[in-house]
Image 1 (cartoon, rainbow, N blue to C red):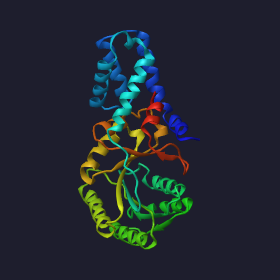
Image 2: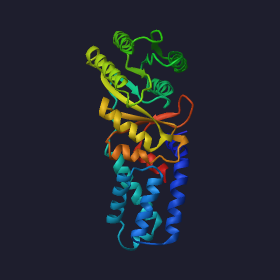
Image 3: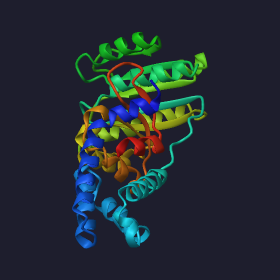
Image 4: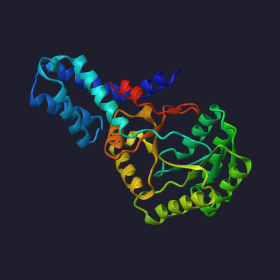
Length: 298
């Protein structure tokens, strides 16, 4: 199945939520302030942030002049153009090699599973991959990552449970450099963004990578559960302030009816979505594409 097919199917719940409400809005045939107020409410109901929803509606007001506002197809196409422009405000970084990717986020968002999928993605791109089991706190986290590494067919660097995560990163970096590995994927323990000591631990791992592997391109990706909607936006805001996030990986996109928070991520935080998880299989992860995401949204 193509990425378009996967993303379209993944956004089925969001599309049903938005499209039905838009159809009902146009059936009322009421033009004016009430129309725009309801349009804003529809966007917010899909978890587009309030500030972003207001910006979108203002742009619709400016461009949908005269009788054209009665044309549902015209307004829908206009909305698509506006939303695609918002996603374009946070361009996806170009991946260069060799690279280190550190995955961070709160508990339960699917970081370890995501790393298995990302490893598989890069193998499909004919790149060599190593994973680092720097989540040394959660019970069985190392075993879980090893299962995914074996499934993808990639090397894993690990220590005993309870070890210093930065020591794991140090050894993984040394191994990747020695073997000329293209991509090093670093798993980290889930942490609440309000726990200062855990956030400082991320900074320590960050320093190890930069000190020991300065020639590598270093990307820090925040893994977010798409089903949490605006809560995911709140997590992104705090992690961005703490560890300077380069991009987002969305998990469980196929399980949400409120995918609109993605526009707030890109429009307000200027943080791009890099990968999207669209299912449970190891190959159900693709590079994010703004145009195709918007096409799947309506």
